[in-house]
View 1 (tube, rainbow, N blue to C red):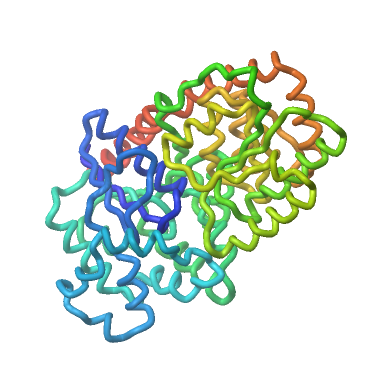
View 2 (view 1 turned 45 degrees about the vertical axis):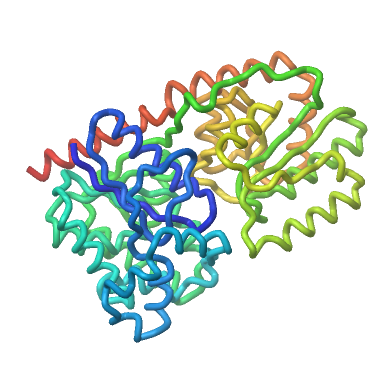
Length: 431
């Protein structure tokens, strides 16, 4: 098949959606299909080599300039290329790009207004370029925040369109009014131009179907998948400290403070004499104050030599990080629709502790690779840390079960096969 997939960069941040989109495209290519992965806003930051096109459409600089200046809405396309080069977008991304929904309501609505918004020129550029490429069998829009592309692409290319749902409600629900209501209305309106929706988990499917008013008959589930060969388990040395870890964005909603609180409680009880808590991940400029406050709290507890922030990790460092851990914890304070890091940790044979919510429940129940605790409950989290610390055989069994199940159910190859089933049915129906 020939598939055109449209993805969105997230500035300088590692983004679960970007990683998922790239892994799917790579797996489809390896299966012998033609895939055109087209990035929007900024070059995607992914694990390993990106298979996306070099050219970035809807360049973040252009989108911003067109939103706030009439002049840039009518500049010639060739002039726009001056600030649309991937190296410039990448450089700007490294300095921090505003991705907080509280600050992006007006811009979000303008993008969702499609060819009636301030970024009409960007829609025209993308459509014009796609018309010069081989006609695809299917077009996959990688998240519903890009769904305003559907009417324009359907009219210009006449090909079936599917849209992947990856938990966009989290962004939408943080928009201020009247932008949230308007954005939601526009997404529901554009959904009429989408032939099929794909959700990345059963939880996401159920929630987003109701949230966006999508008929269940129009929705398929293609679970997340990772490149499992890159996350092989290794035997951990018994001579090093017992290590608990977290990997993800450093932000209040991710709940790192809850994990630190649980660790502090067990140390107050003189548990874990030889142990460490390590956390790593992207820190946005808007959350530096959060980390600074957490660092002060850790120092006040006298645990600065035991609890450490490792910073953002490149792919090889991330895999090494997982292999250093005895337990992996994700204490999120919201219903996560993806939870990619859980799959990666389990693939490495690391047992997981997760709150009983969102996709975490689904992952743990299907893999047997960890345990669930009540959400936002440091005391319960502490108790589970202590229990598993004292149960070597139990940890080993959880690790083996998780690693085996991820390889069977959540590989990138399995994701590609399931996606192809949806694409094939969609293509057949269009003919």
